[in-house]
Length: 274
Image (cartoon, rainbow, N blue to C red):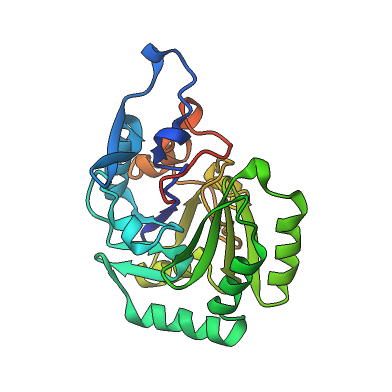
């Protein structure tokens, strides 16, 4: 049975220039590989150490990029190693198979959203009405599934997000403040559901998840940061990480895949997926 490794991207595996936080002396900074270009400019980076491990991981496990990014934002990324067969985008709203959204999965997600929560239009209208232009910089809708605001944190009233969360809760949506972004996401729209579907399709008997959300399993060495909405109910490892000689990369991934102590930080810096 294969091992499935589902990893968040921004601020877990890849970093924008603003998120790198290279606070060490220049001569000790890690070597970086650019993995995303946007509008002819380099945007996101991976450490060379992580690049090598990611390539090894492909031989030992089913690697599944798992992100809040839209399909378009995800497809800008060029990770080293074999192109993953599966990828999860838009917080679980799209399950990509060989780069193409699975129509049956997407249809099932839309059906759940229609049955269980208020419409995106209602939530978007509320955000447009209730948010103050003084501290809002951008209104965004991601793949017609959820909405988010890019804000100036220093100007954002402390109680506004709490009031929005109460309003959204009554309509089947969740609200989270992550760095400079306020996300409004339907409760049924989860990365975890898509990860379970990939595990079913691949027959994986062990699933490992890595991310910068506080609700990512601690067995996957999460970092705390500002990468995207919380991914509640992630599948957790059913036992200890594999350490046998036949799968050294999976065991090593937990401790070394991200930049570790050499880069990445909390804060309100702009993230690549913005």
